[in-house]
Image (tube, rainbow, N blue to C red):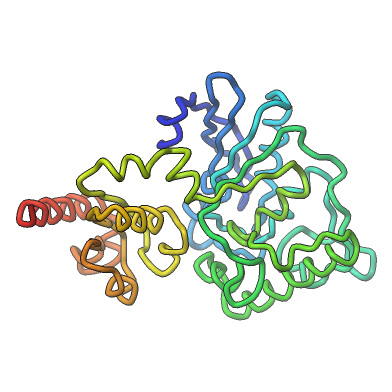
Length: 326
């Protein structure tokens, strides 16, 4: 919505196949008036919010429908256009290899058998056939997290559990990611082991194989391109939101960026969130106040079902605080 207003986008919808069943659904796409900028959100295509809880399984889900959408957009718009993807909130952990399937990527095991491009099979991959075609349109990705593809702070160990993976599945996912990265280097000379491209289940790797890829980190996008730093400088206080306010919120994600900029300009910040990690909340200084909606209800489920009431209660509490602390 912020991009729609800031860049005066026209919102159209595109039909794509679901990434967890055979159904089709509509994805919002923002188009600038001159058709030079095309905005997408990965969360609207392969996001956690799009999939029922019981079907969340990063071991089998992939991003192939994103690849199909990119091909469709590439055929509809000029090569002078640019696709801008907001990265985050994905339910996948496939390194973006799924989106490369419509472009010709194949995974082959030691017996010469082609494998489904699902993360649970990555550990069995022996050979990778890279995409045969590429997009003529440049892709720019806006990412709010800088994490490696593997390791303790990597994509699998950091994010896979919240996407529905068990500890055993995370172990297999991690081994599969390491195997794919090793083959990429040995077979194709593509060395991504040390690159911080693990956000969005590693989508940046796949995108780099099918397009001229540029990465813009959220801090630059929010503060400079959207000119939020200037807005923060001129405001009295800031009210922002977050699903779960935890350590990840402060890893250069939107909320953390706003908080750090607000502290720089000595502005008060009020964070309304679904729930808050106590260790993070206690570490925040006096200029930041956290309002988790879960505190207004007996159970987490009730706080989710009655989120509008929760937000009203949080806003009333914020109003009371502001009036008593002029």
